[in-house]
Length: 59
Image (spheres, rainbow, N blue to C red):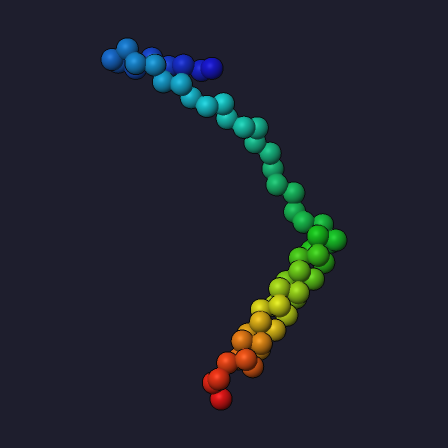
């Protein structure tokens, strides 16, 4: 553990830093999956809104 000593004699304990790595850009397959999931999420939200309006008493 890396300890440092301050002026008053107190010790500070610092956490170990994680390894840093460079993020990779998404592949074509991942991009396709993001588009499919986005479309599925949009269809789900629109259908939920449709069901909420169809069962409500608002005309």
